[in-house]
Amino acid sequence: MASVEVTRGDITDERVDAIVNAANESLLGGGGVDGAIHRGAGPELLAECRLLGGCDTGDAKATSGYCLPARWVIHTVGPVWRGGGRGEPELLDSCHRRSLDVAREVGARSVAFPAISCGLYGYPPELAAAVAVTAAREHGHDLELVRFVLFGDRAYDAFAAAASG
Image (cartoon, rainbow, N blue to C red; front, side, top):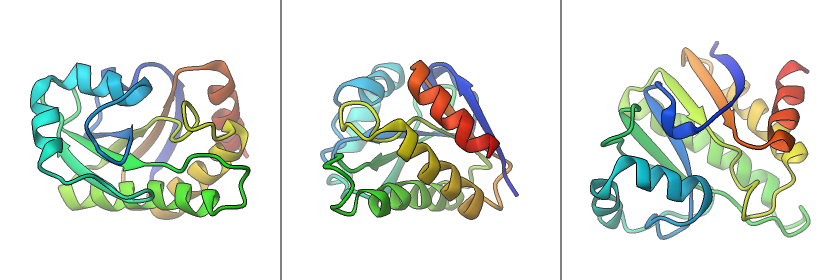
């Protein structure tokens, strides 16, 4: 079973096999975590992402990490929060499960996640944390480490509470 950790920090500094990018459907960069990962990886990441043809909400695709410490970047598209009654929890769960599947496919043993959908997409961190931690525990069983790397206090507090429960 994977060790599940929660830490504060910048996901672009993580020394793990793969980091997960909270991407948009185009995979061509954006704000928040997505923009930081693209800046950290360098222009080669954008060039590779252009070849992937985008990504559906709830799915995940891998690229090289280029200039990042992580060998791979797993891009996943989280749901936009619209109150929780439009399949958001199921889509967020799918993001985490598919990201873990893709991590295994590329041979990763350690994976770092941000708080997917909790920034610009408006997903409440307290609700997202329960989905994310449950997915990591149920679906990350054959990995060595699943780490949640949070930037803000609200997200950190929510994920730390979910992981300790």
